[in-house]
Length: 279
Image (tube, rainbow, N blue to C red; front, top):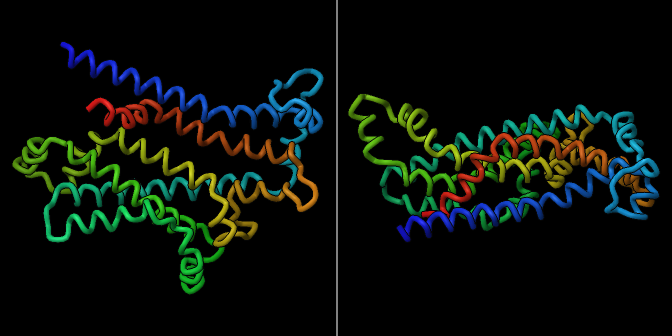
């Protein structure tokens, strides 16, 4: 009885900590959205005040929609993010399943090699990556960004998913093999549904760095037709003058997909994060 009570207490504590960190993380978002609907003078006079009759102004949104090709930037970011997430989840789950299910010589070393990407930033290889993309003719294409972000997200995906896949019942998988199911069927129909919370967790934590990244779009795809929303927002930032209304409006619009994804996967995300806390 005491063990069940202790587990319940740990679960409640984990949820409380997660909610607290969510509130702290959303506070900058609140400040950006609030100030995007105020006049420039009100932004600097009282940045924490809410929009009201005296300071309400949507000039930032009208500027964003009038200047530049905002919808094209938004579409480019959406294509790159969705394609990268699909590749990261698919290939990361397949690699994690292989490492956790099959025992072969070099299994541990291969898992360690894949996990090194978590500790070594991919930006250290920017020059080599740019040279490869130039040699492949992929500069100023969305494909280049998808390939880079897939490589960036795979180490974390493999690391997290392999730990969850080791908890899947061996009896369930062996029963599937006895029934004549192929390894692909076992993977897609038995294993993946059971690690769905972990998949949602990986998806959320992988999407945010991709959507907000400025480094690789600036280097690999800076042309007008391939700009992402983060790079496109930089047109309002000048060397001497910055249109803060437009910048905040662009950032507010860019936040929407991240919030939508969080709302969709929030339940699975919380289950994935707290699963390890209650073991």
